[in-house]
Length: 496
Image (cartoon, helix red, strand yellow):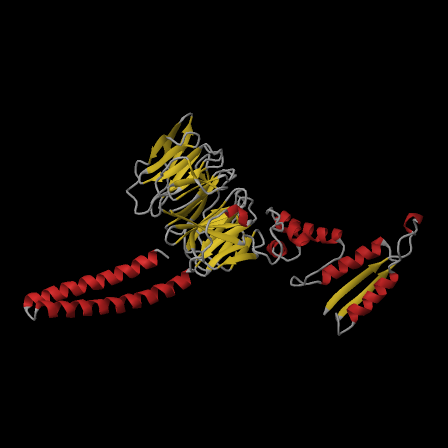
């Protein structure tokens, strides 16, 4: 049974308030509507012209009679704020029920309650990021460059991708004519561009586009995959991580970058906070640890998820940690690992997880598409039916870039004019769609290869005669033609 307590006053001792509109009739009419079984079916009570002490006592009685699963709503903003304050006080005292209630309120559709609860939990207050029902980044284009990863300058005017540095206004190349087609990172002041190499990183000056120094990791084996460089929030630390190897770290001392040893396990993923001295690592042992980039020491205890994690990412201010598994992603407080929200999508790529620069969006790339979620509530804002293995936002929030399976760079924008004259072909398929395409292509390759073998074998046998030499020639021609058919199909797939 639902309860409604209606409080109204139309008689005032202070003459200042006598000109106010008397709400007594409104309270009576609302009482009738709420009590109507066909409308509200509330158990109602009207307090008319009661003293403040009587009102407080009755409100306390209503709250006291409520169970832990009951939801209490008030039209009075001050009462709502008081309720959040009480929950915060109890949560800080160790009451887990109150803490869970605050988390539920932070994820609620009521923006006022969500903001108050988020502030009580010490989380960034979510603001509307777009018109309800509209896509956050509605426009897309194909850049065409093939690369491992992309990076934007702090002012978003330049983007490094596919061995080039591009102007994000004209999408024309600037700077060096050709860089390694690897991974990139701009320093926070925009003066340096780090380009990963098989044994470290080359640092370019963005003023002259010349190499100013090269960093070398002493114990870095020749990797199967190229490493990912990242600068710390102050630009004084450079970290390079390679899958299945320990990371390498250098510290800027005057004009020199000096290598510093790190006692870390082999990594699956590493992410550096953009505006805080923190980085998060995910080891091959499924252990997640947050580190202080200034002291290079662990911050707090490690976190070991129940199932295998695929990627981690820190919010720009370092207060939230996103942990992506295969089928879900959890938003956690960095301080105590408490879960703020759980998203029903994960990622299969260690770089398929990214916060927006303002910390209000989280991108996850999973097998069924690219998803954008609000932070901290975890509401789904947009789904793009495509698959990208690397996601990054521009600092000014105009653009989002993703690297497809075949290394081609795709862009999404708020305003279509930011994409200039770049082509807008259909997006590449999702991982699930890709698996279907591959399965069909393999069947075609087998059929085509078999057909080519039969044609080549038969034709060669007829031309060379029915002899052992002719049989050998026919067999060779058949194998060659079947191989050509299979390779042709593979080339078509990689060029999707």
